[in-house]
Image: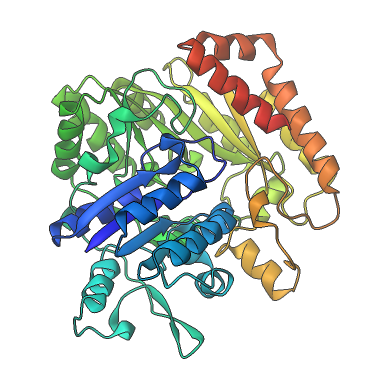
Length: 458
């Protein structure tokens, strides 16, 4: 079958290869399908351009990676597909269908199928069924489908042995062709590539929905398996990799083994952990090993400057523990980014200001201040939905610098003002600002950061 997998047209400023699509593409290639992967942001594709592509190629299957903020753009994509290539079957997977499977097919009424959780097992089975195979739809793991007008969903399964998966289809992702705007905004070397070494997260943060996609139990690739992929990437000319795991440092023993093996292999690549690590998993030995193996930057999930909110949201840390663990990084040369959040239900305005104050007290180099979003599948989403408080959500506002939801205790305009104040106060300090300026690599990088900064404040 002729298949297109794509990231939909949207307004994100993070332009990087999709590992989710890469893994699916590799699986489908092994099954003998003709597969293309399209990153619309990298290609700067318009809807007119997408229309022309659909007419020219007449794909059998078009599959979308779907985040919540993609819902309306995908609705537009689907309208184009059904008008111009009526026989094309459409499929979506990713965070939103995993967190709200039934709602996805209700809202996207022209979408044929969706997948909840990891789709590497289920998607090939669906394609076999569509090609005339005998598999029953009810037997396809994670499939979300319509049956006589009703939406049905099958339980997902999570791949036990990650070593059985092929590498992402790097020949289709072409990481060396991406612009200098990867996850994290700052890099030391180009080209870069993302990599996932573990899947799953056992943490219980109430605002996060990550376990909807990859489950709660952490599964890890073998060292040989990981090193084989890094050798492949090095052979493609990749000079830096970013580990995108949800909870890479959950096992200190695994991290120490990885760092030792990475250093022994002598790749010479710089690397970072831009998705964040849990501070309660860190020891001085782990921090030193990370730096010694070439890790130059990582993010930490601080979130709040209030012990009350840290308890309520299941973070499993205290303000004192955060301070103590950040001291472990003294003198090792790793740049630290802190993740912070405003606007979670029940938070007071005074607590929001305490978060800003706490961020400025910590020994971190950068901060990302996010506005709470009720992510589908998270505990917060479920609580709000059960209480009837979600109402009509504006999906286009599901960006970290926009206001997708507020419980009314702080008006959206006031929340946005606080967010701007936090960014300006944190980065307005000479030491922090000069540190950022020192990391600018080129005029192109400067203008990218300027646009990203402006978007944050608007």
